[in-house]
Image 1 (tube, rainbow, N blue to C red):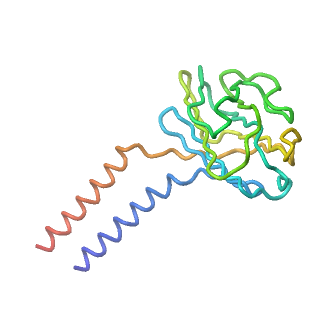
Image 2: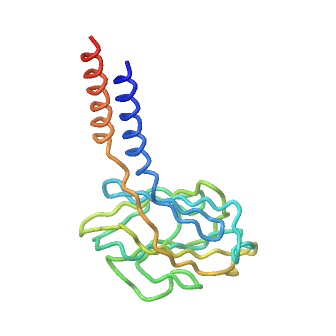
Image 3: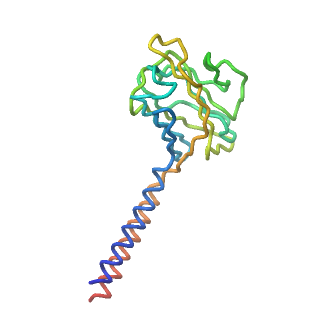
Length: 192
């Protein structure tokens, strides 16, 4: 019985560690959480920005975002965006205080901008890459926060490296569950 409890506890701890590692791609900057994940060829960014602090305290909307240091890719497309951002323009330009108006970094950077959208929690952007060798291990993320009037930049133009967590594929979960089942079967055989 003690062996069964010990085996089950060990399996649960291993399972929790495996699942916990998928949660790791979060950066908090001035009260805003940026959570990212990479699965297959898709990069997902979730922004939780209901209550910005610091120099972003007066921020009410998002006007643009940019990813740099993405390795190389032939093309990228926006596959999901918050309401109002699905019509934003995708380019390879540098993000400045005036939007995606800087020099181009074709095949290594993406910049997304358009009419400002209200800051909320659970703002999800997804980008699908094709060709080249995309490698978003720790891309630089830049965002442009705007005030209530929608046109005035508020606070810092953030430029921070964002840790990106790889999301385990379904096969990984299947292997983990299979391993837990085998541990249970082994414990049962020893008992009987």
